[in-house]
Length: 257
Image 1 (spheres, rainbow, N blue to C red):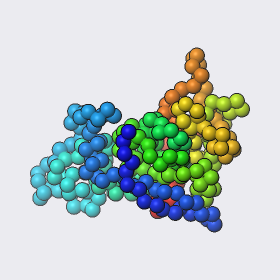
Image 2: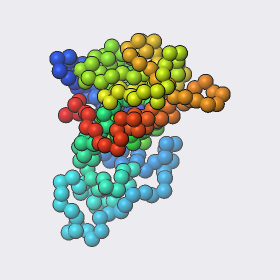
Image 3: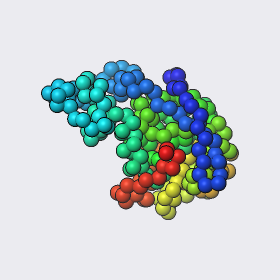
């Protein structure tokens, strides 16, 4: 089990309602750059990315968003080509102008190994924020350090999490295959949505279900009762982008400022 990274406390508020949450800090950039070049099993991968900027220091770009260390040594991170050689802080700042109008929450009641995978998908789908509800520590290996480009928050209880959502003005949507739930495509998801996922073994907790005004499920056509929660999360996030985004960029991240 991977150790949790250093964390600092931050109180977030929206409007007149104050909601406390612990924002999780990214790991040091040098460590994360190395981790970018490893597989999920920890084994080294074939070299990816780009080498040092051609021509030496005299030919380096001078814009502030470029990282001198990456220019000198090359950029092997798992990032889009447009972000090659950029500082971490510059990438996050640019992403903050493009984040979508939905958020993701994951109940962490038993060190679920799917959390890292869900975080990685959240990065790819441009979510505004990611929330861990319950245990603070989780296995980060599946995230492949993509969490460092996100705004990640921890809430010790469902009550604390709900307060954050109320302050931010987002609508809770549980994702679970339960009696009374509607298919995810039955009607459009809220534009300002918090998609909430439970554990692999138990799904959403009773307390979290009670906090979600609506629950959606992903239709299935085989014999299994349910699919892997990481896969379900990926489908749900993609569905929000298809239903609500229509290709447009939506900025919705009041708690990252």
